[in-house]
Image 1 (cartoon, rainbow, N blue to C red):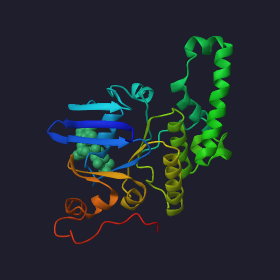
Image 2 (tube, protein in one colour):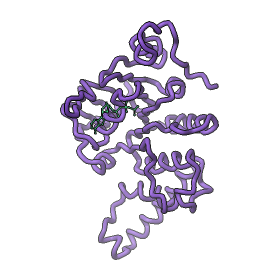
Image 3 (tube, protein in one colour):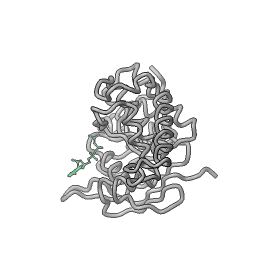
Length: 266
Ligand SMILES: Nc1ncnc2c1ncn2[C@@H]1O[C@H](COP(=O)(O)OP(=O)(O)OP(=O)(O)O)[C@@H](O)[C@H]1O
């Protein structure tokens, strides 16, 4: 049986009078790309924020790689093994691409503050390893030649790749990508699709929020659809696409005869 990386059960979150999530649960297996879609305001970002420790849920249980975990603070979540990117890119703009990735890697370092201040041999060795790994990751996401460029000088698509490299640097069990294709042109999207495929083929596990339904349908192994905080459908892209509740949520009642876009590359 495939190893379960993330299992969340019965997550609810209320903001004042608004029930942003009600009883949402998903199970993601190792090596899967799992998509989370839904119309604007459906609760996708809230769900992400709950599992990555930015919001405290009102209810819900969480298990990461077989261990119970409580997403109580962002750095704890990173330590536990979930790395994320953000809808609005959050890089250190004045730091180089390499430094941005090295920062991600520091989640896994051992020398600590004392080692850093005293510049112990252990610290220096670790720094060297971190730098090597950061170079490898920049190559892996396809922006190795920009290692010494400040993050703010990279194109939008490359900044998104850099965020992914930084997330990978934490050696995560699960990588959560929040709208990675937002603002990308068709060429950048095709490259992103290749990159996500490569990450999956390396036996990594990905949770993806994405507005581009076509991209989701083409990439994901399974998909959950949220609407007004409720999980209205869960299944393979083909199953979800044929689900009348999903078509209604996207296109409105009476349009169930229309199909959602398939994942075929344009
Ligand atoms: N911090 C908050 N305080 C109050 N209401 C919130 C907060 N965050 C989200 N909401 C509300 O919760 C609902 C779900 O929002 P959320 O951002 O999770 O949806 P979404 O599916 O990510 O939407 P989009 O696709 O537009 O990003 C919305 O009605 C939103 O206004």
